[in-house]
Length: 286
Image 1 (cartoon, rainbow, N blue to C red):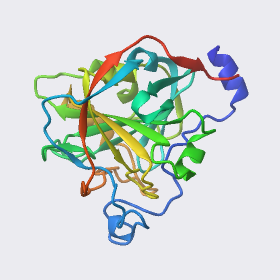
Image 2 (image 1 turned 45 degrees about the horizontal axis):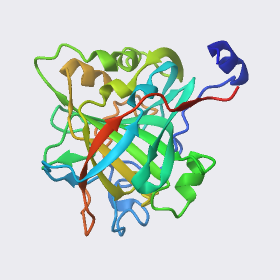
Image 3 (image 1 turned 180 degrees about the vertical axis):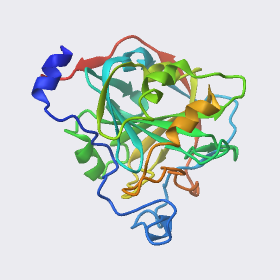
Image 4 (image 1 turned 120 degrees about the vertical axis):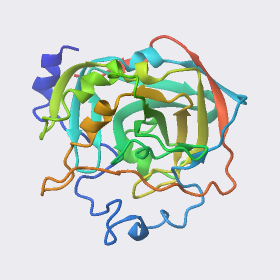
């Protein structure tokens, strides 16, 4: 589909993710922080994020994962005061998760980061937190929308693929992140940009998986998480750009937009082998 056709059909491009920009909850303030979040945020038994254990051997396989299909010629970028969101505008990648007996359609990307290089990610590995986490949100393709998936009672109505980033002094910049990073310092309204490939940031062939929740209110326990085991190296200057995104009407920086680690309870964490395949995506309807 031509980019001009998309623009003609959509006079306003905006990010509609799992975070409502009008929501009153927050991360760190005593008046609206995690202690005030509604049920099941505090009482649930399958909450996210968690500390992932160090696992050496895989015990499951995800076949035909279409990593290459996440490349998009056009994307939109927006901040909703709680995160930065990315939408792919020409194709909707999807992947089949046989163990879940479901096919998941990509919806959007959200980022989480901290005020310094040692914090920022929501998930940790063996107690180690990372500077940045990228979450690719998907919903079951037999549900009509992300909103329907969030409102359902299915434990696997959503799948979120996560990539962790760590700062490395030897890295000058991460080229795969640059299509997003180069627009972050300047944008104050939703922006349209060309060519991004989130799939290029999925390195290695192993990922943790577990059943969990959204990491923001409503904290619905309907997410199958897939967290890439291999962290991606980025420069300090890369993550510093995220720290310049504003969070409030007063223009303050958006920092530490991550939820604290939740109890594992009786859940099982597995390390899966990822086997890659070619295209599986559908063109967005005109």
